[in-house]
Length: 218
Length: 316
Image (cartoon, rainbow over all chains, first blue to last red; front, top):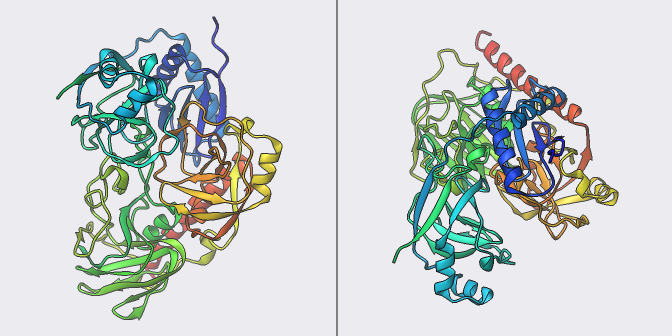
């Protein structure tokens, strides 16, 4: 199937969002990340930052030196080339993250899903997840895809503070809160693993495309 | 060095923020009023991205531990140096040991204090800015407390003259109630009436407003889409959550989010919004991307003018 044509729209006067499609899919996300890597590699003048997301890549630029028309034309051309190139994705890494399943929502998740607490733990720790994206707060990785029996909507009332290291689930995803932050996901456990360290060369532990397994520890 | 002798309720070290780490989920952060911080740096002869103090919510005092040419700007404050009044956007010379006091911030929200040489805190992810939610950047990743000392950079060899003053017509119109916005961002998610409501109503800054975002109170906008797959946002993006009341994202806003965005505040006018207090009102006015970029270039050229005038004053 031929991919839908790309569309660009401005995000304010200093960013362009390039939309790759309307529906989330593994294939679309792969194209988004591939384009984001190409845009980074292309070193287009006046580009500050390249931010991939589920359906789109957003590029921040310096509008004092490049107009929206100029920069979006260059970016669209670079994305087109990326789509047609067969460049390999970078080698993805595998991570094992030890988790204590002691989260405050664990019982409630069991009740809502009709599973036992042991089943919730077993199903969450049984599979390998893929890093879809980093974002929201530094080092937060959206991991897919959660066992279907564990899918729950976000909590109606987000909590004002979730502790760093909390392992949580929402809808088809799971993740680890890298720092204390408000959040609406269901907390099922905690980890000591440092997800983000701004003084490291690679500040975020996880990168898009990486694989993550959660290992139960007592 | 500068020592905080009586910390205000909020004080952090900031500069222009982090412009190359969003893909790790790191927000731009940096000064809430990106114009004022560059202006006060320009006035004291610093590089525009030097670190300065961002000061809010009340008075406090700091002591200069070395001779220092300094300037304040952004919010309007009643301020003194060793008991004598300090004028805004004007270089003032402090001798080592003198104390600078803000008695009260009388209008606006964020006051900036720049010292010659800038504040010498570690550069983390390309910036000296404090990112409070992540506990990194600035001074130990936190707000400054009474008793803290922060190092200053080396004094430049030539300094602007004492009493150098930046003309008011080079500053944003902070008293303007108009904040310009651009469209183009998920605008199709909103119908004509939502646009009319957004641009024809007064919106009041809610008490739920901080460095992450300003919740706005006023007529709700109809929005049928709910959450969308997460996509990049930016400071100034106006998102519409389920209750239809706009939230303007600010410096520390998350890099990506799922609420539909109807518009983005013009970068040139973001300082005007940032300086609005809870209870104060604004009205949004739509302009084109080209107009918005022109306004931003004008701001950059005004800052450049201040820098040049400051540098010329030293020879006068």
